[in-house]
Amino acid sequence: MKGLRLLKELSRRRVLRGMLEGGAVAVALPLLDCFLNDNGTALASGEPMPVRFGTWFWGLGMDEKVFVPKTLGRNYDLPPELEALAPVRDQVNLYTHFNAYKDTSPNLCHYTGWVILRSGIAPVNGGDLPGETIDVTIARKIGRTTRFQTLTATATGDIRNSFSYENANSTNAADWSPLAFYTKLFGPGYQDPNASTFTPNPRVMVRKSVLTGVLDQTQQLERTLGTDDRARLDQYFSDLRDLERQFDQQLTKPQPIASCHSVDAPKDDPPQGEDTRLVAVRHQLMTDLMVMAVACDQTRVFNMAYSTAQAVTIKAGYEKPHHTCTHEEGVDPSLGYQPTASWFLRRSMESWSSFVQAFTKVKEGDGTLLDNVLIYATTDTAWARIHSLDGIPMFTAGRAGGRVKAGLHIDGGGTPGTRLGLTAMKVFGVDATEWGSQSNRTSQAVGEMVV
Image (cartoon, rainbow, N blue to C red):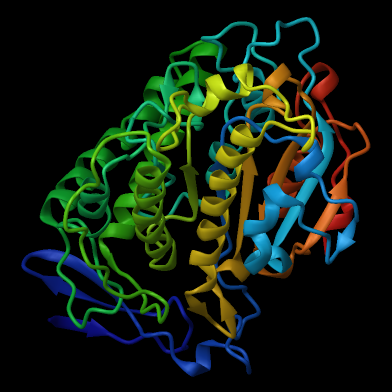
């Protein structure tokens, strides 16, 4: 490499610049001790380590009798449907007795609830995807410079099972194959931040050059358009500039990341099917890949779905899927709840627990990856037997770099569930004083969870 030039003042952004095979190259310096504070938890300048946002989804809510703890605050009790959370209770906040309001819209079974909690707006019909989902909003704030602005995956084996969208015409399709997901994340386009060498991808270089040329020609065009068209064009080119930033990221050698390490490719995709055992295997495979993608800073916003809204997971030896079970199984008079429906829900909570635990297994700074993450988990209904939206449960996991408390059970007292989404956006610096529409509109954060 020729023409290397050293900057006079050290900083984490200091780079070595030169030429490689005719292309400009910027090589970042390693994450030296002098770039960190005394305990290695932040940069010497005081800039914190990256904080990430994720979502997780499960279908068919819960049964309050065996789901909602009797105690609030820390060390909350774990009723039967939450027993799987024992290993992560201190990292997980549970939110109960929050509501989703349909207002004048119909209660669209297994649809209205999740759309409200993800977008703040009640849909008017089954094809309505109002606004944009919270992950997209936060990604516009923190995901512009990573290789993937967002990543979306599902354990259902169906690309359509996504709970992330930019608008009604732009759903973020879910990765469903562990093998394909591995190739996408760690295949030919992956730049290992801990590799000793770096070769920029010539295809990316050409794409960035073409894109830059297009953007340079837009100023004259904008002066010829009306107000509405200028606004549309501004949004379009804003998206293109995001793409240009992602190209920049791919053409710059990543900084070394201690928590990032190689991942073995799955030997094969699990068999297709909705048996809860197969779903759990797919979920774990996709989780392990997603966690390492986050640790390697390929994305700072991610989504994972365990099941569909009207979950069709099945139990070996039982002839009906989860969804049908919630409607047709009777309440056991001695137990006071539907035992088989509850069995299905407990499998969901086992996968939720394993998802959270996966982030705790990656060391980052003086803690774990989960300490620098906030995961927002939602469902589609409260008690699926009656498709209720009152008392719809939610979770968060992680501490968002110390900005959020964890290990709490918080009672919403019948207030809008959109309060949690608004709080998450504020945690990530989104400029929003309120969120949601009509009865779901709120300006009140969930103060108990904020540091």
